[in-house]
Image 1 (cartoon, one colour):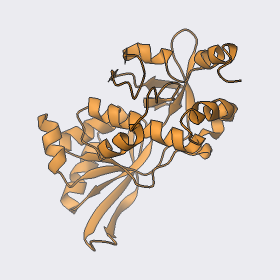
Image 2 (cartoon, one colour; image 1 turned 60 degrees about the vertical axis):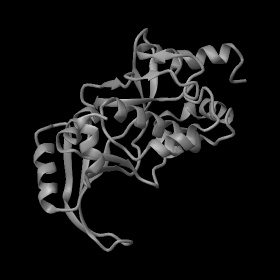
Image 3 (spheres, one colour; image 1 turned 180 degrees about the vertical axis):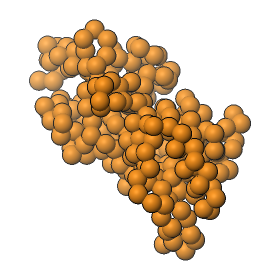
Image 4 (cartoon, one colour; image 1 turned 90 degrees about the vertical axis):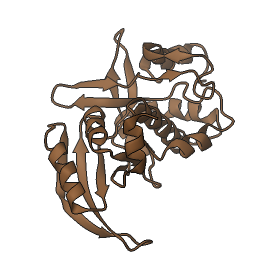
Amino acid sequence: MSITAAVTSRSTSKFVIPCAGKMFRSSIQNNDKALCFLINKGYFETDSLAAMLDLIDDANKFDEVVLVGDTEKVRLAKSRSIVYRQRIFTKSLNKLCNICKVLGVRVEASKQFRVTINNIMNCRDDLPFIERYAKRFGETIDEWLTNCCIVELFYYFKSRGITTNMDWMVGKILDGRVDYLYRAPFLVSSYDIKSHSSSVFLGFEAKDKRLYKDDVTGVQLLEYGYTENNVEADKKAGVLS
């Protein structure tokens, strides 16, 4: 275990991802476009105001991370303990990871985290094809997209040395599966609406047959994920008929 992972595993400070943003297509190589998951909002949670002020101070150093509203003092329903929460908006998961690593913050996906059809309304023409890919596992569009997003988030944060609560989620999702991420959308690691630019996360080695039946690494992932060219190839091959 790395020093960062050891620190974050003991930390009570966390960044919580309650939901996903609107999915969109990101330009990639060969004049192709990849359908992508977007994570651009969430909140920091600490058990002390001092720890929250440290997080806010660090977040303010990055233009890509914007504080939303005031810090809230919240009493938890179950434990009745007090925590402090600060909502944020971010254009860069990479920058957010830097903050989490510096201050030993773990990342959690909310138990209510979902990717729904509402998240893909900007790319609604893709829904019939996503439905076909999801049916391979007997899942709905919502179920498959949510699961794929959680799996990709887990591997993204793992590659950055960030501790999460997604280990058990991923184990449950992938239990008994093979080739589960085949034709799955990608995860955006940073984006800029003004410049119409974005970066797709390709930074993990997929040598687990549950993810892809073949060993896939780096840019090779583009050949296996949900891109316009790949969908067209599947149409011609009769996979989506």
